Length: 323
Length: 314
Image 1 (tube, rainbow over the protein chains, first blue to last red):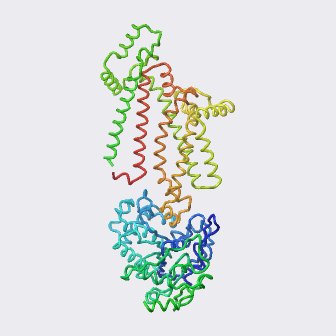
Image 2: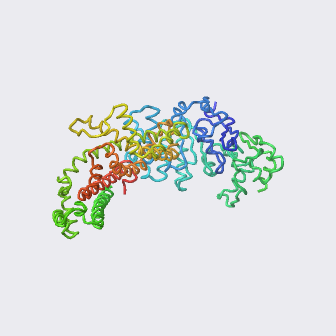
Image 3: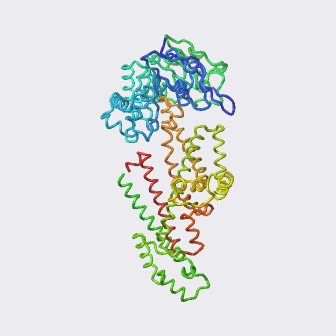
């Protein structure tokens, strides 16, 4: 049994014009010690997926489907049980490490808080543990740093503090929502290296949410590509690097500056209030045909563990071959 | 941080000096001879001249200003013309009523406002929130003297729990003195608490939308615990700012409320001094009130430092 099993996960937001299905039918499984990259543009539903896993959806949004952690259904847990789970078995780090830390508390106290909450650790012991965690995320001079306030640290240091905080109780699953986006390029690599190192050391699973394909390709074991709140492709990283099956993924790779030729995908992400009934990428897809608008395309098997949601996979394979 | 404090301390002294100058100049340029005003239109010229000499009004203005300031620094506030006692003595006993009254009112304001404001923020959009918002709307709309009469009617006349006015003095015991101050303090506090509760609510709601609250929740804090442990202190900066401003209007409010409850405080003294044209008392008390307000602002600055470590490095 995989550590995390997500099936038909959806998120619905109530709006004046009726419920909006901003996330639809997301499914994946994640083994212990593995890293899943979730990739997509802004508005693709990556962050909603992460928040739904944590049970931290914004007011007015509700999750459907099934999220099982170690066999336990999370979507049916009450708030009290979720509070005991969050920060203990599942932890999360966020994009903006400056605003994600409480500006009025020394970082040591913030790292110690999950230990005080979940382990009922006495203050002195939790403080000592916080200093040990600071050393573990390779921050120099933990004794001095524990007493520092967030504004006294650099962006990279703050993100390390966030990671130390997330690690405090030794979670089974760490959800990292764009953990490097707000950081300098050189620091980004260091933070990703640290995350990989910690996964290898602790055996926890990591979900790395990012719009940075290169970062995910270097870090993750498998990749989930989201578009307009749906899964368009799901594959092991190696397979994805060899062959992108979905036209959107192909466009995403072509849009990478690293490929030398920068080709933007024409159009923009669909308006969540006016989602098409069929493939949500159809209006931007170079290969779209009338049938694409008929209904949601099923996730078809492309290779071992490699699936893509497109009814034009053969045409897509041909264009990929040609380019 | 030391620099910050020194800067604020220098500002405090400068503001106080400016306040004395303004008070002095206003009374200086005001039409009418103070001695004539005090004695009334029926006074004979030689009486007026004698009083002018007694008050030192026949000396040049700069000299009188220096003498006034010098006297204040030595603790000599001059002599009240109507009471014929040193103003320092007069003001001293009044301060023992007004300052505790203002502090009690501020404590009630803070307790009511923080309680209601945080409660409303925690239940945003729900019945409790709407109830609190309606109540505060009412509190802001009702003038405090009218509320004072309502309080007297209910708690003093009908229920008889509290005296309807007067002050037994601190010699009568702390309990009796506080009992006499409670209704006036409540009358003062209601309007301020209503305003502050709204400020608190919106400050807390602002903070609850911050990223670090989501972090706190991701760590396993319940909604309520995240509010108390992470949101409240962050929301305090705007709340404390308003509290500082409110203390000033509270002191001004004592003038009315002390008259309604016949409390022998500074506000009542000012009121009487104004009706009796006792200019020396007015001058001194206004500067004293200004000094109190300036001191409160300094205390607010210190509170900022205590609340927010980011300000301490400046």
